[in-house]
Image (cartoon, rainbow over all chains, first blue to last red; front, side, top):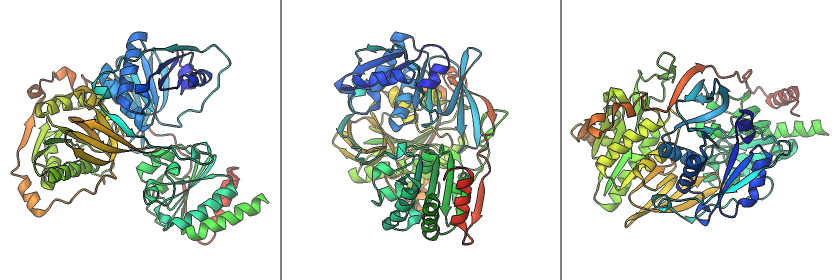
Amino acid sequence: MLGKAASLGGDVAGVLLGSGVEGLAHQAGIYGAATVYVADDARLEAPLPQPRVDAIAQLVGEQGIETVLFAQSILAADIAAGLAARLDAGLNWQLTDIAADSGTLVGKQSALGDSVVVDVGWKTTPRIGLFRSGAFDPVERATGQTQIQTFEPELQEFSLAAEMVEQAHAEESGPSIEDANVIVAGGRGLGEPEKFGLLEELAKALGGAVAATRAVVDAGWYPYSTQVGQTGKSVSPTLYIACGISGAIQHKVGMQSSKTIVAINKDPNAPIFEFADLGVVGDLHAIVPKLTELVRARKS
Amino acid sequence: MKIAVCVKEVPDATAHKRIDPGTKRLDRSGEGALNAFDANAVEEALRLKDATGDGEVVVVSMGPERALNSLRKALAMGADRAVLVADAAAAGSDLLATSLTLAKALEREQPDLVLFGQQSSDSDGAVLWAAVAERLRRPVISQVAELTLEGGSLTGKRQTEFGYDTIRAPLPAVVAVADSINEPRYPSLKGIMGAKSKPQETVSLADLGVDAGQAGEQGSRTEVLALSDPPPRGEIRKLEDDGTAAEQIVAFLADKRLI
């Protein structure tokens, strides 16, 4: 996103908020931020939205920032909306692109289950935008000096009222599904946890990773770190093979940016068939092992 | 203890949703229904009320008069009272204008807890509670899959991309519940019959002290400029397995140079 912002002209800055995070500032610089504002404060350690609203609002006021862009995450959505109310600023969400147009900015929003694209504008500044994850690929810029500016956040009492008692731990062993080029994902249609074995074989043959829907993760069939969807990870691999997944919106939003989507499901009315590039109505228990066999044969 | 639940009437799930190119707003002329995710919030409020043994659950909404039909569903489930902000000047409100109006309606009620559902099925936003909490200057926790109240504070188990956070906040607070938090009850026949006689109040922007200029399109800071069709995803192919599905998938992937 930093790259996209840089392409719009004007000054681009990254904002880094947290505790013990100063070391990450240079990375923002590599991806397009000429300046990185850093607030390193123990009160910002927990991923809670309201103290971040205070810090960013303060920055917008002090630095005269006109546009604040976020990449979608549960935390970012809460921050963006709180910030909008704090600054009396317009917030456009579900953005897939943004462009400069006659001295102002226009966003492209995907709405109504991706059935329509809406050009959305901001009537005033500051503007706030919330982008779908995976909307842009990172672009490393040629070397330039990144100016790092620290600031002391002034936090409001009500913003600090919520406290983190215990934070979620990302237990991940091995490569994250977000980095995988090929993902084979499984949902309730697998029938039982052991069937993930079939997907693991296919993923191995394709050199990819295995992901899961929320339903099966909640049921304990596969680890949380592999969950794709609204309350899980967003992925945009080159190939996403969805097995036994209905394709409800909560899952779709996590994988809709995949370049090619193949779906295997025995229910011909599954919503996933509305957006899969290749939809196969059939029994995954028969198809997946055969597919694995054929892929292996091709590779050898 | 008073719990306010913010709910919305949205186009019925079976309706084909479309934006009217003339008004650039969602076409709401068809059947409306209580937003399914809001039913989780109503249910959670009722459970909390049942657990404490006393209290009041009031559903608050903003919409046209006919939205009272959807509010009645919440009353049929067991909510005690409904308040609808119905004012033509509020139509076309964006997040900012909506959150301002709702916040004023909530301030009027002074609830101990404000609940929202996970998202509305018509706007893909899933952000309203954070803006309302900001206006009310109250702590907010979203994506709550489990909620417990103890004394003057609440503990929420929040669903995130990394697992569950446990967060505590003092009341009064704002909470948006995840749809996994509960299974909303079906209204009983007695509940449905009784809903009609429960207090249902319609208020205008003026009643809330909201200036017409702060609401609707005038009070909105975002606008819809144009509509267009989404870029074609390319050909969508659907086939039924006749025994050769695996071979056909391989051919498809090879064609795209994916294997």
